[in-house]
Image 1 (cartoon, rainbow, N blue to C red):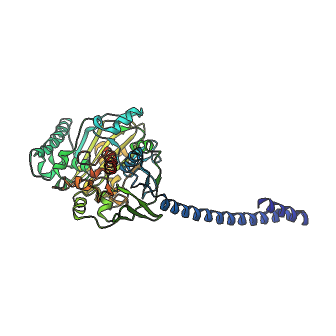
Image 2 (cartoon, rainbow, N blue to C red; image 1 turned 180 degrees about the horizontal axis):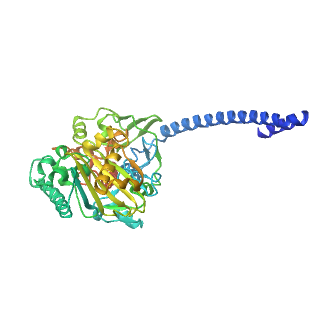
Image 3 (tube, rainbow, N blue to C red; image 1 turned 60 degrees about the vertical axis):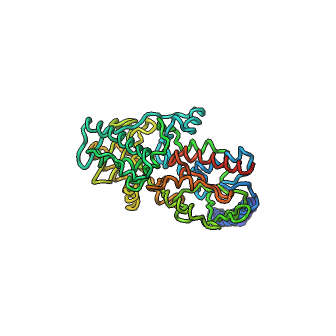
Length: 471
């Protein structure tokens, strides 16, 4: 086509006077560009329609043994384990990328920033930590502790800060004493009296993603907490993505309905219906509670009750990139800030031993900040820094970012918590339906809930359940 256009231009030049050549040359080139653009667009549309048709046909015709819904840590873990057992597996994901609630952003700052899960909690017993060690990942094992505390207009002295830190440890020990009781209580009822109670109790919403008055103490007691909270320098989201790089995922492919009424399952998606022998559902309790996926038959009452007893909580992050010349804080130091009763944030400095600090807000206060609009949580953290370090601190902050997990339509929050009396719901949520529809994810775990390694382990457990049924 391009050769023909050039021949036309040469012919026009040969038949017109020299002074006209440039004008005619410009016009002819313009016509040719328009024609080529049109042909190119037509070709693009044909290819796009062909791709979409083939994509739909591919999903509809694969007929795998198992369809995994959700490509977060639990979905990827279950897919890998099932493949190791010899099953054919399709993984579909509503989002445009894999990772779920464990995603690393490499474009905001020069340093990787985990938007969701970032910690290898209970590192000494965490299987992901063991994998990281075997892969020679660079790990940061230093723990953070309060260095500065500002409560309602007053800075705590170093001695008071030490007392406050000790009280936080004692508070968690007291909450865990629920194990000596038969009945469940809210975490709020087990917070010991102290002059530090009003500020320290706000640490609970950062850990549980929910306020102490709505959280189950028995659920906290059953969490297996061992030593070590580690960070992976490349970001935990990147690490998860890399260890499952061989798992093919159909992204932008949400499940809208799951029919488990017959001998197999049918999963409806915008790209077609997937027929399989089994389905593994790994979406958050936030998605389940909002009934974004329809079920036929409807979920039984015990399953619906379990979902209601395990709401998804909220923990949002505020990333702060400091000028490297600012040396006011380093890795392992943190600053706590309280206004009123519950307006609280905690900022941890020196992530990955870099110039990145991360602020945390949780529970109802995090919800309010997110509802108030983008930048509100960041402004609150900046106010806390100015109160502790002086107004000039903002001159050293180059970039900021903040998460908004409540607004994420594919999660509606960060991770699950159990309401008082709801700890047993995790086991109920994990139960399969008719040995065809299986459930996985951090919310299904009774002692590693609300963690990335809990999601990882749930994927392995559900694969073992399916394998056992097939024997």
